[in-house]
Length: 67
Length: 236
Image (tube, rainbow over the protein chains, first blue to last red):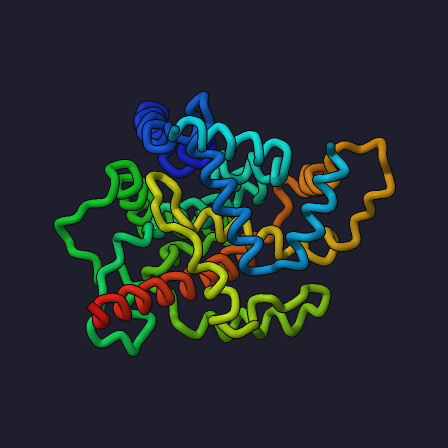
């Protein structure tokens, strides 16, 4: 995540500050209990189901192979 | 109780699905696109707004108004990070270094970021793109109402999650739809077929097309939500 910021800003100190701010902004996602990530995954699941049921069935089928 | 529900949800997800999408939602799809396209992706992501930041427009005939950030009340500031990064990114890309930026990465066309100066014709462009490439199934061209109706059951209670990321993941899936549908589950030695498939595709997805599709979804989603809001308001 830091690489694009550094590439655009070209100033290590400033890029570091931006990266820290970005990480603070995204911190819910990296939380150990994974609530935010799982909520997102859940949203994605619902979105796939809403938009493309056929694809969802395929994905489900593939994931059953995982068990 | 709340903990229990979330725990249950977590277990369901582990047993169920989408482990291949874990990296996508965690890192905002950063790994999926070539480095030169990441700027465009991030800028669009950070410029997109969560649904509660859109204001209800009274003459809701024109959908594009709902998507224009100028309809947001100015006193409601975005989270500090995104606004700072946006200003930095956009001011930088408009500055004098823009030319050598463009020579270095041709696909990054400067000031074009997200919704700010996007023309409404992009939906038409999208459809054209798809009709050219017959390998992709045209899901995006199905009538708006169809998927949005299924979609309305989603509770829009969101703390961090911004729907644009979700739609971007969806766009990635749609881009590779044909290949996914052809994946065979007969090989038992591989654990996660879809995950394996997408691991090979790291940094190789077409950012421009994915963003277009994601914007298309997001636009439909926002205008639908606005209409729902309007509907509820007039009914009360």
